[in-house]
Amino acid sequence: MPPQSTAPVDTAARRAFYGKIDKANISALWNNLANLVTPEPASACVPYVWHYNAVRAAMIEAGGLITAKEAERRVLVFENPGLRGQSKVTTSLYAGVQMVLPHEVAPSHRHSQSALRFVLEGSGAYTAVNGERTRMEVGDFIITPSGAWHDHGNASPDPMFWLDGLDIPLIQFLDASFLEHLPEDEQPINRPEGDALARFGANMLPVDQKRGATTSPIFNYPYARSREALEQMRKSQAWDACHGIKMRYVNPTNGDFAMPTIAACLQLLPKGFKSSRYRSTDATVFTAVEGTGRTRVGETVLEWGPRDVFVVPSWKPVVHEVDGDAVLFSFSDRAVQDKLGIWREDRGNA
Ligand code: 1HN
View (cartoon, rainbow, N blue to C red):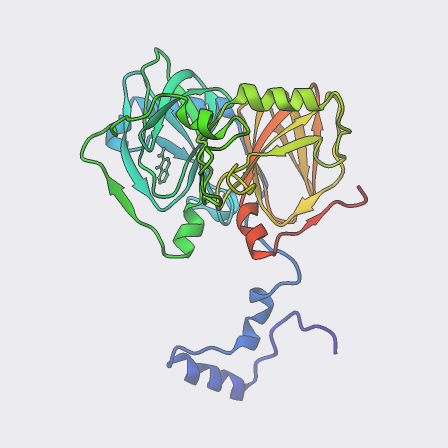
């Protein structure tokens, strides 16, 4: 028998039966099986790019309309055109751009959702997580673990912009969302700046540190360090045909991705590089830190430069082409798929 790809034909008797069971909130699997279990991923998510200039202009306009405090978070949400109205950049993930103006505070709260920030523009605003502040600089990768109090403030003279990535759709799917607010806008600070990075980010751990913290205890991975690692590696490391040089941000207590639900990476693509055709089951959000290029996703060409944000859906073939040296930050739900043993990639012939 060939595999069945369409529903069986209707007959009068079948229709009558469907009508009868429908009243009891029952349906026949054979009418929907082909949609439920597909031979390969069939996502509604589409490839798309948001150009920073337009996003920034809208954000500045939003700054004249609402304060960070009133908004709680002044964020413009990247809605995937294939998933409009759902606050989803991919099927499982949320992304947006946040702006904090000088002297503003985005008040302290905590929630089940894990969040990452990737700093796009500005210097010197801070995020506080679990009693410690970290200063934000362009390219820093900052995480807010599930259940951690966090607030943002900007004592610098300039607006601060960053990309937010959260596992909101995933937590929504699991019906596991909780949110709480602190009575004060800013959480009490009881650890000096740099404490977490000293304890956990120097290739050492406190001697009695337990293994296996769900989220990395490092909450700011400074760009200067990550970028330096890529630059050092290019001296000795062959370029991967699909990825150039690509590193993942790691949780030092278990070697896993830094966050339990979101995998984040930084990659260097050298001048003139054209990547081999690649696809994987984790729909991925990219932003360029340095350089310009274009990414082909099937028939779609996404042109990008610094701070633009683009999305590659699950299992769609992707080819990156860069002009000068380029650095891409990316995140996806690979951290979840890995744990479930369902993540797949196809490197073509590479
Ligand atoms: C959130 O807590 C932040 O803390 C940003 O900056 C975006 C979107 C939805 C729900 C919570 C933040 C968010 C968010």
